[in-house]
Amino acid sequence: NKPAFEMRLGIHAGPIVAGIVGVKKFQYDVWGDTVNTASRVESNGMSGKVNISESLYNLIKQEKCFQFEYRGNIYAKGKGEIKMYFVAK
Image (tube, helix red, strand yellow):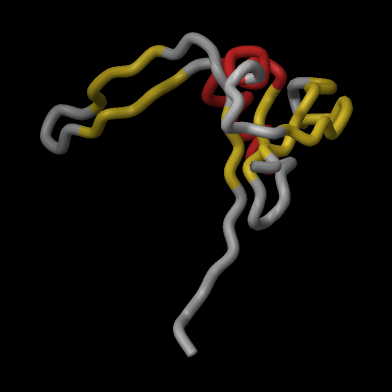
């Protein structure tokens, strides 16, 4: 009987720009195409699953602790088709 929520997670790997924004109230933020792509990967995911881009997949595919489910080319708004994978384990 505890409150619960569902979430999805999307991860992409690539270069970013990071820095502090603001004069009176400082806020650390990140920008760039990598951030936008990660957002698209997340929005094309499913609740309860970790969705990753091919870029991240290529970095971690040799790790024995992970298993992946290839999803194919998924259309991402403003990006075209991106190869995506669910992290199965």
